[in-house]
Structure formats: C-alpha cells, structure tokens
Amino acid sequence: MMKYNGIAPVALCLFLLLMTGCGKQDKRPEGYPEIYPITVQVNEKGQPFPNAGVRFESNSALEYAIVGTTDETGKAVLETAMGSYIAAGCPLGTYKVTISKFDREEVDKLIEQQKQLPPEVEDLKLAAKIAAAESSAKPLVPKQLLRSDMTPIEVTVDESSTAFTFDVNEYK
Image (cartoon, rainbow, N blue to C red; front, side):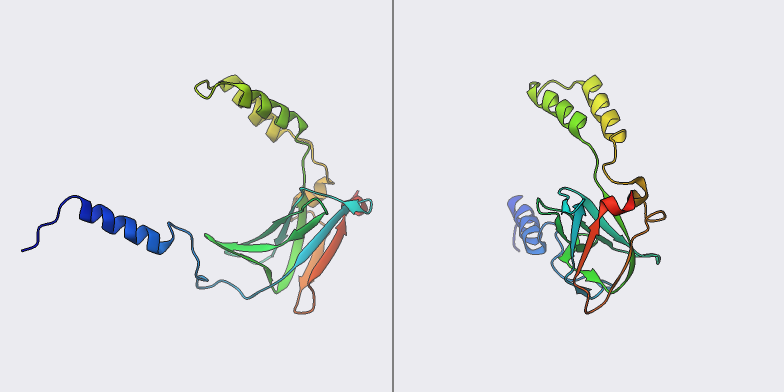
C-alpha cells in the first residue's frame, strides 16, 4: 500500500493549476462568434483623440463585449471578450457605437496625493474624494456618444469593412 505525505496533494493541485493556465482561457469558448479585424480611428476636429473608450453594442442580447481604447494616434483595435477569452476583432453585424472620455485631471491629482501616503496609512476621506471626483468627472465627448440608446453612430461590420473613422466634434 502506498502512503502519501502532505506534499503530494499540494503538488497535484499546483500541477493542475499550471496545466489549466490559472483561469486564463486559451480555447475559444462555445458560442464565441467568428470575428474579423476591425480598427477605429477617433478624432476631434481632425486631430487624434487618445485614451478614449470605444464600444460596439448590438441591439440583440450578446454574451460578449466589443471594446477598444484609442492610443496616442487615436487608433483603437477592437477586441471581443466572452468570459475570460479575449481576441482581437469583431463579429459581423450592425452596432451602435459609443465613445467615452472624461476629464480626469482632478482624479489624477488626488491619486498622486494618495501615492504620497505611507503604505500603511489608509485615508478614507481622500478615498471618498477620489470616488466623488471619478463619478463627477466631466465628459470630454458629447453626452449622446456616451450611451448606446442615444448615440447617432451606427455601423455595419461585414467582410469588406475593416476600419471606421469618427470625429467626436461632428456630434456636438
């Protein structure tokens, strides 16, 4: 009869975690749609609009999210996420497009103050100020672009469409 010590079960658990990728899903999940590479260019008055969130939302109930964030050139590569599986691209279909960006100057100042505190100090008043500043941050895009039920932007993604360009100034 084989006798197990306390290390064998722990080693087995570690081995199984390593084999499964610690929760990261590498295999395409069932129901994940076929996706196509899509880039979005967001400008303001013809100039790149960096650090803006872009979301494609369908009228049908989807089990996945289609999002991207613009880089310093105003370009975003859309990704489709379903659970922990994320891949670059977008499924075919018609979508409402939301674009979001907020003035975070006050939030960033408060976060810098928080970083100056020793790690063992938790300033609840400062944390509350940060939360309040985040919730009241001024949108840097027209408000109608923030919500899928209000946005005037609608696109159809098909095999031939790979890039879309929007200028937030056109919607003011």
